[in-house]
Length: 301
Length: 235
Image (cartoon, rainbow over all chains, first blue to last red; front, side, top):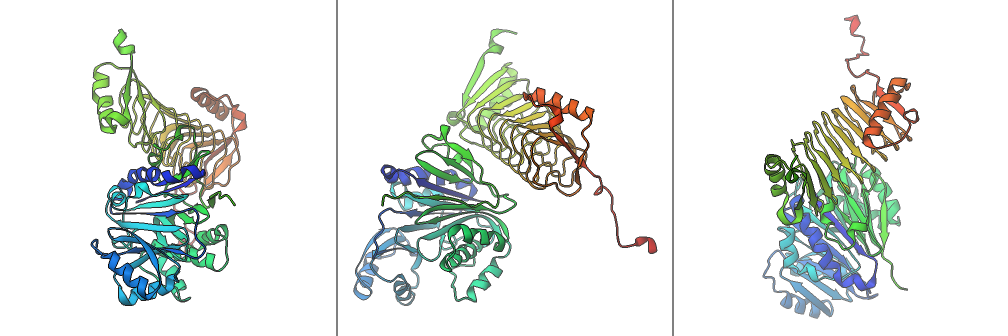
């Protein structure tokens, strides 16, 4: 069992409230996934040149300032926001150059996500504790996807927590289990893709990201994923454009969607949505199996 | 009946919690002779009003979570909202009515009583039902009435794939389109007796449809016995 949540805010004036609205959603799904939790947040107003790079250190007392100063000297100038074992670097640098530099100079530091608009937070522990640790209640943004994990197939660790990310501005959370993750993984490794963990959801994440990199749009990629990924899943995907949801043919992993004029909210169970404003008059429905649902952020041109 | 028994008892689930609500419904409410109860702010919480065995009317004002009304005996429960998985699971008697939609496994394994979903019910509605009756105002999802053993599932809308897969002696009536029948389920001619029992159940559930608008789905009974095609007679 795991819990998934997603929230997309339609009005620009609401963006400051994203964290305040989503943290109770995440906490309500704590019982479905008590061992780890995570949230990927998408921001408005992405820079053309700069990348946002989410970093994780296994040591909560990581000396981010010293690391930032060294990166600044050797790779390029950056700004860094850090919360305990997480940091978000904003810099006009090549993320792959930073990845290579970290592998040599600070191999304990891992990259959780890269993009123009996405920050990824994840850690072991209860969702409410993880949210407090990273002050998720105060994050702003257009949309987000979150997850509470109850591990069934691979170890409990920071890197095994969801969301998983691949490529840029792409992340995935998964409730369910795949029965062919090693086949999927081997097919991608043969193409030169690298994995961070042995988690089945990472295989789904990298497979879909690979289809997008090959030129598929998200609907085409997920229609193909429904044929490729064998197992049980409700998948919720965040990109800079918005949220996408798909459930396997058996649909034995739950999902419920609530939509109002102000937001689209997705969760494993309704109790994660009960606190949202206007929920009493929301359009509430259960997404159908094998149908790809996409909700897009409206941005002023 | 004195005035006390006619009063409406109101509990705020958000304030007192599910355990308190259920303990009160199991013990205090019957011993105090309470006959009408409403639950406020159910907030999608699970296991509300599970295991009731009392002649009471219970109104749940809002959306309820998983297992609401499970194992119900006698009570008449109405949820003024949607419900999560396995509403009225293993219902024995009484009525559970959902004014909105139900998620998966509605009335799973129900042995008796009546379950009414006024909106849609999703996948596996009536799975392994063992004698309860179910009326769905809208559609049912895939694998509904899977291995259903006894009772009637009446669907006023359409049905998803795999309807009545591995069906035993329950009977399914569907008014709208059927995406696909499961193994061993087949459409059979609708008799006058079918029309009468469908209309009787629809009236109890508060629907006005004519019984002749429904298709009858029942078991072809070919899965009841082992059929070998290996030519064992030759041995």
